[in-house]
Length: 398
Image (cartoon, rainbow, N blue to C red):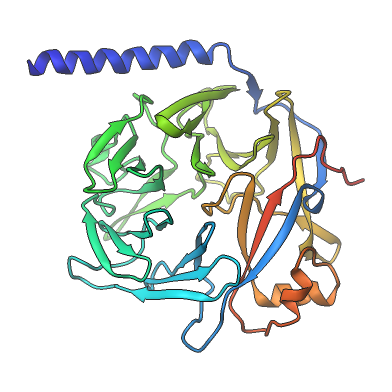
């Protein structure tokens, strides 16, 4: 009986994989090697802006390493990776709603926040992704533990729906454990008990690693490129896996839709020319490319804008007229914060000194002036929330 069940599951996975391959054959194709002419666009022509100053007191002091995890309808979630602090602020006023730190070694605590935090406003829960996933109330009361070992290998964890989380298992590079790398890296687990519910039918017999092992006298250490492979688009997730030539959109009901494919293939040459998702709206997607060369010192990542309606691709540089200013004028906006937020929106931290400088230079938009005039130099960060306007053609800069 077990053999029959295994055979049936295998055939279903194979059928799903073949179906995706046939769909991919008719998808739009994006040439990531093409020398597109550069278009400079203004961020302020593409988005309206709102600023939310986070409350500052002697007991509420965020470090420069604080992470903006989520901006929901009611709350803003912030955490400190190493320190272990969790802060929940009011989405509209920035006033603190709760603060807790359960860093420790007991079964109801966490060591450090390796894989981020998740805000589930509907269930009024916060997920802290450490060695295991600890679930707390919004006030920090312990509720349960999901025994997903986050220290075994690198992973990314997403809030998917009311019942499940999506886990992306990265490649295992530890010497002697390489064969433990998952060939089907996308899996859903239950929010109730952490049990595996389903695996997406995306299978790789050979996965491309964004890290390598550097041998040292006392052992080894990883040399790694850090960049997004999958990003949130509201409650959807855009899957732009480094080992795949196809972009997928994962929607409700575990619906997996291929959007476009790339050429040349990521496997076509060495070093690999990989891609990464930066920002998605209903109208367009921003993505970047990077040469995976571990002997290189890195460099600027070219950004491309794909128009979902026309299939047109542009190489773009989106300039920030408000906050990212240099001696020669506005500089490029660093898109792709990774903060969980509603569709067609983006959120990021802005330091109090940067706000004050922009205020003095009269560059702020929206409610920026009202917020900045009450700021002090050593206040906590301000959250800038961008609502992307769906215009037919962003304004070009000459």
